[in-house]
Length: 535
Image (cartoon, rainbow, N blue to C red; front, side, top):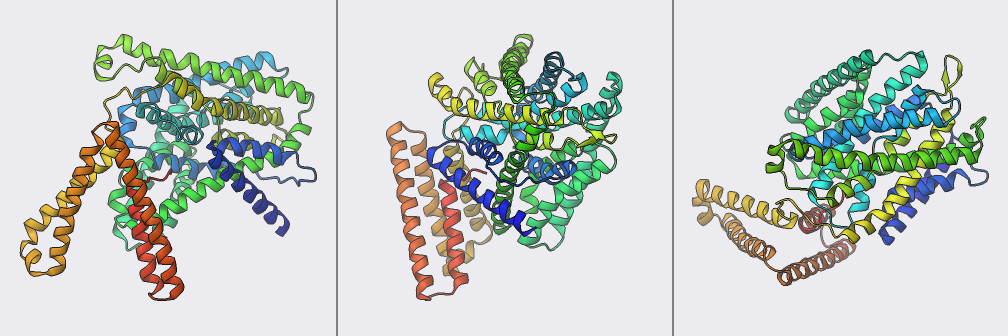
């Protein structure tokens, strides 16, 4: 046990080193993870770890789906619901169908049910991979929103397809009309259960005397409660987690009123999801030798060939789906043409090429049972191998070429969307004016009689003046924007100096640690205003 733990910790440490190298080289970290998983699998003497496939779904999927739901903007999601639905449901089912029939025809002994199982596994693109690649380049807000929203729902739809295909393999029966009915019943009741438990957790967070640590712990427990409850009644735990996560995210401003809670949760969740991504790629790496040995009648060359063909197929299917799904509704509906700007050919190309497969596909593949009716699951190792090849090809090939493609086509924002810096300054200005109005309305006497309140009023007025000037500069020409960038650079440099000064104060023991930590927290908040971290 000690040896296995040390091995996992060592491998995770190696993955973290690779991720830091990726950040230095400005290469998406999922690319390094999949390459690390490949390398780990073929290190001589590397022990093999076996995990119950059911535990993969139970341990990894609920928090991964919940985190994706949490960071999805409901307003943006609803605004672009049509293209998101066409990709999340249409593209998933279309991909599963094509992959099922092609793999059934191409691979000897591969049944149609196994084809649908493989299609369900590799059909959902991974938003984490796409956004980590896109963070170094400028892309239209519409494309990012569609990719993130699609990933949230297509994880659910693909996993439902996966579950039905798995049931068909186990029972040897598949009745289309029964499957469609069960699909909607499972998804619908999953949503009901997810929202019901989310309301219970909402009440606990809002009305009970929780602390930041309790709130953080409860948010970690919530996706598991939701998932297990839905699965207990044989409904979709995936849809339950997604719907519950969206509800609680939308109400988060009501239940987490304290900045310390939000910052603690941000740290806890970003670390958890990052580590889980690393662990899943390590697990597939440790299983690769066993997978290769268990290919049975298929040689390694044949397995690679099947994997490459299906990888190219998934890329082409997405291209074939995205353009008709983008333009046919526009041709059929004048309302859509009036309401939405024409995306042109560049936006759909980015959405198509960003369809990289990732951690959800890996988790699904690893969750395939080892045995079925006491016999080894048919072609399990081949399915795992093909899945890894698809992820490797799409992440490395598409992930490395996507930034180059974006720069070549010189895509620009086509929607009337206010730049993020301008939105941030406008929000700050609105909030400060609201505070100043409140002082005038309720505390007018205190602003003159109480020196501290008077200083607060002057501070607000001064900050309003500065923020208004900054907002004015953001809507000016490029020269003014360069001045703003320089201003941000100087501010960050000053914050760095202040951090060093706080460290010196701690060394000199001139002030208590608690007071110094509060000042560090204030510096964190000030930095967040001008330097938003990736979630």
